[in-house]
Image (cartoon, rainbow, N blue to C red; front, side):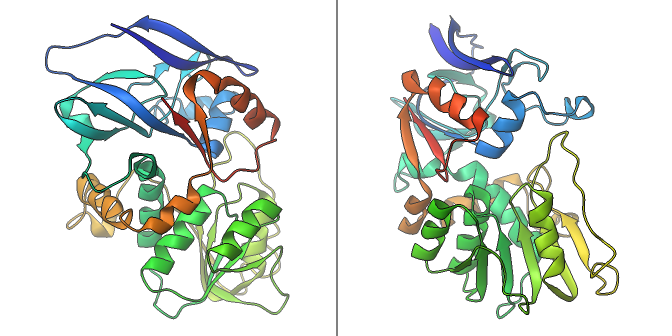
Length: 314
């Protein structure tokens, strides 16, 4: 059996390549239906910006090659089996996959398959929710309305949090945030203060915006991954005097305080339950056939993508 997969052969080039599909006797064979491109993370990977110190910890299941190129990368694929249903797997972009049964999460029939491709990103949003520990009436700032920022905003909104302000400079994404019912600005009003912020813009300026608009003992949940790009901040103004906290949030680990009651499976089930809301379809941006995907990666490299998400259809 032959499978076609997406490879990044060097920082400037991506290609579709065919190879025999390696199968173990107990593996589950799936035909891919959708996979989601993680725009921020995959841009760092395909442009060669993963720090060598993180090559081991940043590997994803079934990744091919290495971060020093060539590399096959991706981690949210929906696949179907004619006699066993539909599954979510952490797997690079590929039209046919062979995976261990324990690595495949069976999807309920009620969940649309394109929406299910959001699962991995919503796991990040769930972790951010746990790390933020927002009070019900707490004013929340979200800087950056890419897919992660949007997912965090919607997660909180669906759980009853009403005081959410989004900062986004991109016109397309700002219009989406406004359409979803969020107060939306290009920059905070000078006197605005927040006790909780989620930073998702992957820029030092965005993180500085959070710092400059936090109330006393405010918490900033940092979700941006910068790769090997350095970040400069002004910490001498508000940061120390206001006793601010910058807290890293990342999907790989369940927060320590919750490990007695939560695990990867319960988190994924919480995400699937949350995805039953139709509103998540608003975060499904451009849908591109697999055989036409290469030019879209070229646009991602050059920073020419305005869409909030990019979905591959097989």
